[in-house]
Length: 152
Image (tube, rainbow, N blue to C red; front, side, top):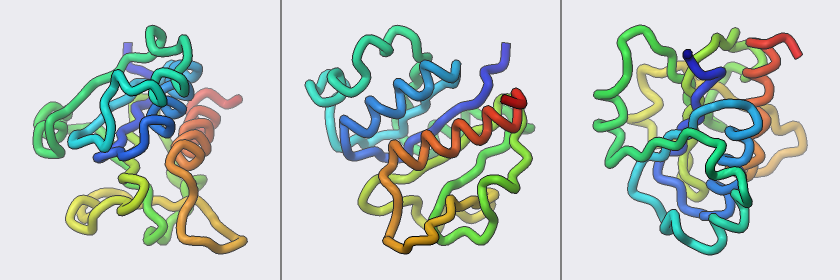
């Protein structure tokens, strides 16, 4: 069965953020895809502390690179790139079951070359600031996608 959605973290740097995203994926029934290189190890204590006992409940995939990730995609899937540089709000996406939600690293976000050719979405930041925390952004986007798909 196709998962509700798939959250993809491109070159994540912080173990705690990835652990929190994994917990979010577990409670939503979403897959988690991690694209190397990472700024930590998956056996890192901070990762284990953040993911708690949810690790066994999330289907997690590791990919050696963006190219490796892409070669495994079916031709009809939709990948949404989240970026503060996007013009379209995430609430306007019209998410469907099985969509991929792609987020960049904590310090760099998604590179321009990667965003090109993908549908780019943003979360509003009416109070300003450079960006939201990765785990917060992924959680907000994943729950909105779930709401659209399942009608919560």
